Each structure stands twice: as structure tokens, then as C-alpha cells.
Length: 110
Length: 199
Image 1 (cartoon, chains in turn yellow, red):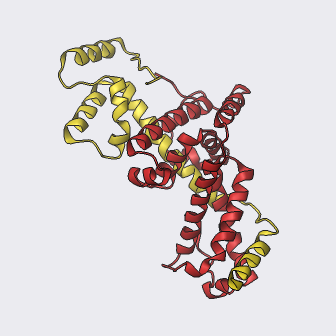
Image 2 (cartoon, one colour; image 1 turned 90 degrees about the vertical axis):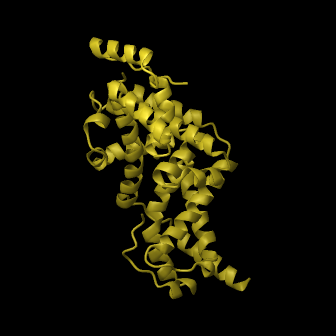
Image 3 (cartoon, helix red, strand yellow; image 1 turned 30 degrees about the vertical axis):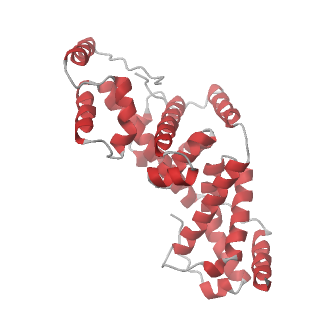
């Protein structure tokens, strides 16, 4: 599913990661890690799954960076909408007030 | 949240006072327009949505019960959001066109930085620049409806997964999948604009 393939720049780290993924029980790959992200950020993972997720983070600097950027995208989306809606100037359409007045008066008549 | 600094006289509003209606419109119009634009992804359609929602909402202002400062704005926003989501459902458009347009914009050289500012800057610093916010909103608007709506409801409006699933009439599992995909696509697009080192 993932279009993203982590690749360690450091050869030693890469080798260690490969060995740990291969030999240590309870380790997950980067692709499996990605499947847990939404639930991890919402704190919806079971204790054991959370440990598994965080164990992967300890050996995978790429996933640390990925998680950081991913989380920031979420926060940036929210902050951009909030700040834009606070600072934008957009004129109210000329006929809107009249349309509202008309709708309210016709509603009163009904 | 919408500003509620200018208090509205609810009684006058209910009686249809043009001055009070105008004051309310001037306060809520622009913020609601931004939310509608993000939901429907089209600025002109968003204007229609907000106008229609405000007219319908105020025509039944009698059912609104004030629960303190800001509650009128929240009530109106909820109505606008519902109206916008209904509009997205009823208007079948090919959002992929918008994605292509956004990519073309990138190809024309909108890049403004080589290093990933997502990684090196705080969220506050990142969105402090107006041009940056415009690009973020453009990237969100360019997402397909199926990804943009879950992203809006979860990450911007703050609904939980169950609430989002109910509003969009899809399963919670589907919300999670779409939300994850939306964040992935948005991340890739923002990194394409602002720079980012894909591992």
C-alpha cells in the first residue's frame, strides 16, 4: 500500500535495523508501522501494540522523521484554516442581507 | 473559531433588523467562507453554499437557543458545514482534475525552499506566512472529495472517528484509511512545494 520506502543513509544503522527486524520477536517493518500511525496518534492502540510501534521508532530514524512530518501536516492543516479564517477580508455580497431579511419575513408570514 | 467580539442583539436579529443582520453577516461571512471553501474545494461554489446556508439558517433563527458567547457562530458554522457536505455529495465532480492542476502549478516552479521546512520549523512559524497558508489551503482543496472530507472533519473541525463516520455515512475503518491517505498525499504535496527529503 505504501508508496514510501524508507532508506537509511547510515550503513551501520541500516544493517542494525535489518538484523533487528529479522531476529528480534515483536518487531514490525516500516510498512506495518505506517498502518498503525492513525491509531497511535489518537492513542487508540493497545498497550502491546503501542510498545511494538514505539520499539520500531527506536531503531528507525526514517520513521521518526516520517511521523514528525506526518503529525505536522495534521497540525499545519488545522492552523492554516484557523489563521486564515481569522485574518481574511472578504466582502459580504451586496444582496445577502436583503435576501436574509426577505427569507425571515416570508418565514414569519408562514 | 469565529470571532464573537461584536455581540449581536438576538431579539433584534429575530425580529429581522437589517442592521443586526448586516453586523452578523460582516462578522461570520469570511470565516465561514474559508471553511466552506476547504470542504467543497471550489471558491465560487463555496460562496453559494455559505449564502444559501445563512439564508436558510436565519429564516429559522427562532429555533436557535443561545448557549452563551460564540454559540450563534458555532450554530451557523454547523449549518454551513452540513450544507457544504451535502453539496459535495450532490455535485459529482472529478477532483482528480484539481490534483492535476495543483501538480501543474508545482511544475511551473512554485518551490520556495530546498530543505524540508516541515521538519525544521514549528507549526506556528510555518503558518505565520500568509502565502504559506494559501498554499496549504490550496493543497487541501485539491484533494479528492473522498479524502478531503475526512481530513476536514477530523483534523480541522476536530470530530472524532465515530462522529466523522456518522456524518460521512462510511465505516470507522474507512475513515481511518481515508484520513491516513489524505495526510500522506497532503504531506507529499507540501514537501513538494516547501521541500522535503523523502527517505
